[in-house]
Image 1 (cartoon, helix red, strand yellow):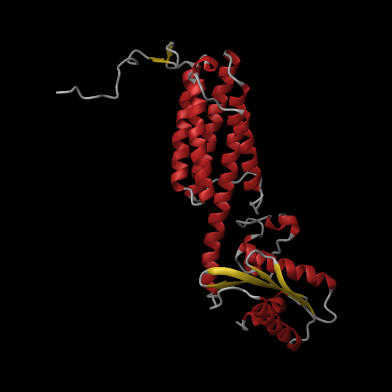
Image 2 (image 1 turned 60 degrees about the vertical axis):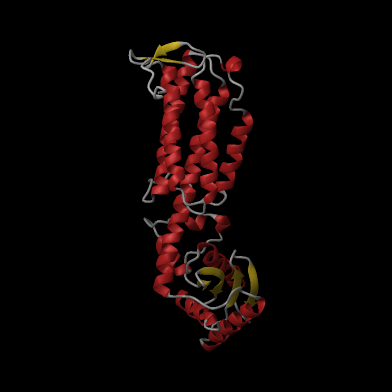
Length: 325
């Protein structure tokens, strides 16, 4: 009968452990502290990946886990240049910088520090970030006492930034999803169109124009696609030139934020979840009424933006436009 294989070796019972290469040190040695904290980081990153809602975040975290094993191995090896075949290089750091820039370009709300939560997907990323920061501190102490390659500290420093960026992305997407669901339930806006074509956009514009004529307000009326790109733009006689840009931006806001701009106004007020959002995207985010998304079968297919009257009048004309469909 074969002896059962066990996972315990008993070699560390006296408070020592072996490094890569065979050298034995105390378990409280700073090198053990450093790679042990990396081990913690891997576990928390894995947990964050299991709860992440965005595929891009899941894919990035999987790569990070694999790379952290390389970091941990090198920290556990006094002579990595002799004993390790693969190590973290500048290419991995450059990849993280590119990924951070790509993710931050998608962040619409304020980019300064936020209080983590209430979503578990973003909260776990913040937890992973703090563990990586601790690992970086331990590695910095090790660097002061022994020789380690500078790429390791650069990698850990950049990784905490990457985790923060992904936490922001998860927070934003979760927030928009939750808010959109509430707004849709409240307004019960839906249609039976599959795609917002030019013909449909013209019908919406004409219906809105008639309402504007009825209330005797010269207005600018913009209809955009699901990405906020303009399909039609109509400026009524005597409508202010400024109304044209505002109408376009209202349509853009309603499409990309997937909510009416009057609802966004509440969230962007001081203390609101999206306070400061109007300062991003080159100032194109509008936080007063007159922009409404167009829903069909649970998806935003476009939007309408109206400007030229009071907020209530702009909303009234925008809604009249949607009555066409």
